[in-house]
Image 1 (cartoon, rainbow, N blue to C red):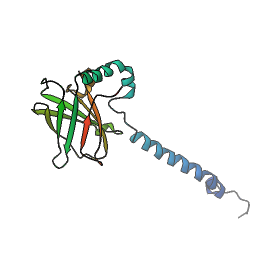
Image 2: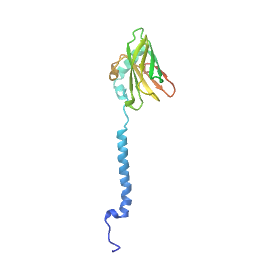
Image 3: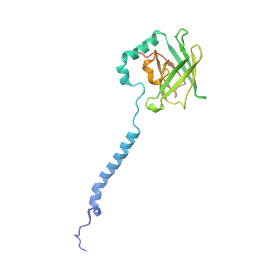
Image 4: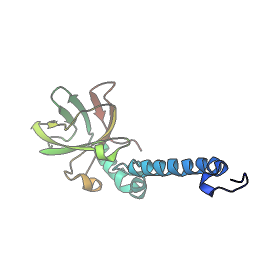
Amino acid sequence: MNEHTSKPWYREFWVWLVLSPLILVVAVSAVMVSIAVRHADDTVSDTYYKDSRMYHFTADQDERAKALGLAAMVQFERADNTLVLELNGLNGEYPQRLLLTLSHPVEEDLDRHILLEQLSTGRYAGTVPGELRHRWYLRLMPELNPQQYQKAEWRLKGEINFDLGDAAPLNPAVQ
Protein backbone atom coordinates (compact mmCIF):
# COMPACT_ATOMS: atom_id res chain seq x y z
CA MET A 1 0.00 0.00 0.00
CA ASN A 2 0.98 3.50 -0.66
CA GLU A 3 2.14 5.63 2.28
CA HIS A 4 0.03 8.52 1.15
CA THR A 5 -3.22 6.65 0.89
CA SER A 6 -5.70 8.63 2.92
CA LYS A 7 -7.71 6.95 5.63
CA PRO A 8 -11.37 7.72 6.30
CA TRP A 9 -11.76 10.90 8.41
CA TYR A 10 -12.89 9.05 11.52
CA ARG A 11 -9.64 7.06 11.58
CA GLU A 12 -7.45 10.12 11.64
CA PHE A 13 -5.77 10.86 14.97
CA TRP A 14 -6.00 14.65 14.59
CA VAL A 15 -9.79 14.61 14.08
CA TRP A 16 -10.34 12.91 17.44
CA LEU A 17 -7.78 15.12 19.13
CA VAL A 18 -9.78 18.18 18.06
CA LEU A 19 -13.30 16.74 18.53
CA SER A 20 -12.93 14.95 21.88
CA PRO A 21 -12.81 18.14 24.05
CA LEU A 22 -15.88 19.48 22.21
CA ILE A 23 -17.82 16.24 22.70
CA LEU A 24 -16.84 16.21 26.38
CA VAL A 25 -18.07 19.80 26.86
CA VAL A 26 -21.43 19.03 25.23
CA ALA A 27 -21.91 15.92 27.42
CA VAL A 28 -20.99 17.72 30.66
CA SER A 29 -23.24 20.67 29.73
CA ALA A 30 -26.20 18.35 29.16
CA VAL A 31 -25.66 16.76 32.58
CA MET A 32 -25.37 20.17 34.30
CA VAL A 33 -28.55 21.49 32.64
CA SER A 34 -30.50 18.41 33.70
CA ILE A 35 -29.26 18.78 37.30
CA ALA A 36 -30.16 22.49 37.34
CA VAL A 37 -33.68 21.82 36.05
CA ARG A 38 -34.30 18.87 38.37
CA HIS A 39 -33.02 20.63 41.53
CA ALA A 40 -34.15 24.22 40.93
CA ASP A 41 -34.65 26.50 43.94
CA ASP A 42 -38.19 26.70 45.24
CA THR A 43 -39.96 29.86 46.18
CA VAL A 44 -40.97 30.41 49.78
CA SER A 45 -44.68 30.53 50.55
CA ASP A 46 -44.55 34.07 51.89
CA THR A 47 -42.95 35.56 48.78
CA TYR A 48 -41.22 38.88 48.92
CA TYR A 49 -42.92 40.00 45.72
CA LYS A 50 -46.37 39.39 47.17
CA ASP A 51 -45.33 41.01 50.44
CA SER A 52 -44.23 44.15 48.63
CA ARG A 53 -47.48 44.27 46.66
CA MET A 54 -49.56 43.67 49.81
CA TYR A 55 -47.49 45.85 52.10
CA HIS A 56 -50.44 47.68 53.65
CA PHE A 57 -52.39 44.47 54.20
CA THR A 58 -49.52 42.63 55.87
CA ALA A 59 -48.70 45.73 57.87
CA ASP A 60 -52.33 45.71 59.04
CA GLN A 61 -51.96 42.13 60.27
CA ASP A 62 -48.84 43.01 62.21
CA GLU A 63 -50.34 46.25 63.54
CA ARG A 64 -53.46 44.39 64.71
CA ALA A 65 -51.30 41.80 66.50
CA LYS A 66 -49.30 44.61 68.08
CA ALA A 67 -52.47 46.46 69.15
CA LEU A 68 -53.80 43.28 70.77
CA GLY A 69 -50.51 42.86 72.58
CA LEU A 70 -50.02 39.40 71.11
CA ALA A 71 -46.93 37.37 71.83
CA ALA A 72 -46.33 33.65 71.90
CA MET A 73 -43.73 31.13 72.92
CA VAL A 74 -43.50 27.80 71.13
CA GLN A 75 -41.73 24.79 72.66
CA PHE A 76 -40.97 21.76 70.49
CA GLU A 77 -40.65 18.28 71.99
CA ARG A 78 -38.57 16.37 69.44
CA ALA A 79 -38.77 13.09 71.36
CA ASP A 80 -42.48 12.66 70.58
CA ASN A 81 -42.84 15.16 67.66
CA THR A 82 -45.21 17.49 69.51
CA LEU A 83 -45.22 21.16 70.35
CA VAL A 84 -46.86 23.39 72.94
CA LEU A 85 -47.61 27.05 72.27
CA GLU A 86 -48.42 29.69 74.89
CA LEU A 87 -50.32 32.66 73.42
CA ASN A 88 -50.79 35.89 75.38
CA GLY A 89 -52.79 39.04 74.73
CA LEU A 90 -56.27 38.22 73.39
CA ASN A 91 -58.16 39.09 76.62
CA GLY A 92 -60.02 35.80 76.82
CA GLU A 93 -61.06 35.71 73.13
CA TYR A 94 -58.79 32.85 72.16
CA PRO A 95 -59.70 30.84 69.05
CA GLN A 96 -60.21 27.10 69.39
CA ARG A 97 -57.59 26.37 66.72
CA LEU A 98 -54.57 28.12 65.26
CA LEU A 99 -52.29 27.39 62.33
CA LEU A 100 -48.52 27.34 62.75
CA THR A 101 -46.54 27.27 59.52
CA LEU A 102 -42.93 26.12 59.53
CA SER A 103 -41.31 27.43 56.36
CA HIS A 104 -38.03 25.97 55.24
CA PRO A 105 -35.62 28.71 54.10
CA VAL A 106 -34.84 26.97 50.79
CA GLU A 107 -37.11 24.02 49.96
CA GLU A 108 -40.82 24.77 49.65
CA ASP A 109 -41.58 21.04 49.59
CA LEU A 110 -40.36 20.81 53.19
CA ASP A 111 -42.82 23.44 54.52
CA ARG A 112 -45.12 22.15 57.26
CA HIS A 113 -48.53 23.38 58.40
CA ILE A 114 -49.45 22.37 61.94
CA LEU A 115 -52.99 22.67 63.26
CA LEU A 116 -52.91 23.62 66.94
CA GLU A 117 -55.80 22.66 69.21
CA GLN A 118 -56.58 24.64 72.35
CA LEU A 119 -55.78 22.77 75.57
CA SER A 120 -56.70 25.62 77.93
CA THR A 121 -56.94 29.40 77.74
CA GLY A 122 -53.97 30.55 75.66
CA ARG A 123 -52.34 27.11 75.59
CA TYR A 124 -52.26 25.09 72.36
CA ALA A 125 -50.72 21.79 71.26
CA GLY A 126 -50.06 20.08 67.95
CA THR A 127 -48.17 17.27 66.28
CA VAL A 128 -45.16 17.95 64.10
CA PRO A 129 -44.84 15.69 61.04
CA GLY A 130 -41.29 14.50 60.49
CA GLU A 131 -37.92 15.33 61.97
CA LEU A 132 -36.94 18.92 62.74
CA ARG A 133 -33.39 20.09 62.15
CA HIS A 134 -31.59 23.29 61.24
CA ARG A 135 -33.33 26.65 60.72
CA TRP A 136 -37.03 27.37 60.05
CA TYR A 137 -39.27 30.44 59.79
CA LEU A 138 -42.43 30.35 61.90
CA ARG A 139 -45.77 32.06 61.21
CA LEU A 140 -48.77 31.81 63.55
CA MET A 141 -52.26 32.94 62.53
CA PRO A 142 -55.92 32.28 63.26
CA GLU A 143 -56.65 31.49 59.58
CA LEU A 144 -56.69 27.68 59.20
CA ASN A 145 -56.13 27.55 55.43
CA PRO A 146 -52.42 28.09 54.66
CA GLN A 147 -53.27 29.45 51.21
CA GLN A 148 -55.39 32.22 52.77
CA TYR A 149 -52.70 33.68 55.02
CA GLN A 150 -53.31 37.16 53.61
CA LYS A 151 -56.87 37.12 54.95
CA ALA A 152 -55.86 36.35 58.54
CA GLU A 153 -56.89 38.92 61.12
CA TRP A 154 -53.42 38.92 62.71
CA ARG A 155 -50.14 37.05 62.53
CA LEU A 156 -47.04 36.46 64.59
CA LYS A 157 -43.66 35.61 63.14
CA GLY A 158 -40.48 34.07 64.45
CA GLU A 159 -37.48 31.98 63.60
CA ILE A 160 -35.97 28.88 65.16
CA ASN A 161 -32.72 27.03 64.71
CA PHE A 162 -33.09 23.49 66.06
CA ASP A 163 -29.32 23.12 66.23
CA LEU A 164 -29.36 25.78 68.99
CA GLY A 165 -32.57 24.98 70.88
CA ASP A 166 -36.20 23.83 70.84
CA ALA A 167 -38.06 27.02 71.84
CA ALA A 168 -38.72 30.28 70.04
CA PRO A 169 -40.70 33.48 70.66
CA LEU A 170 -43.29 34.68 68.15
CA ASN A 171 -44.02 38.40 67.86
CA PRO A 172 -45.58 40.87 65.41
CA ALA A 173 -43.18 41.62 62.56
CA VAL A 174 -41.23 44.83 63.06
CA GLN A 175 -41.96 47.39 60.36
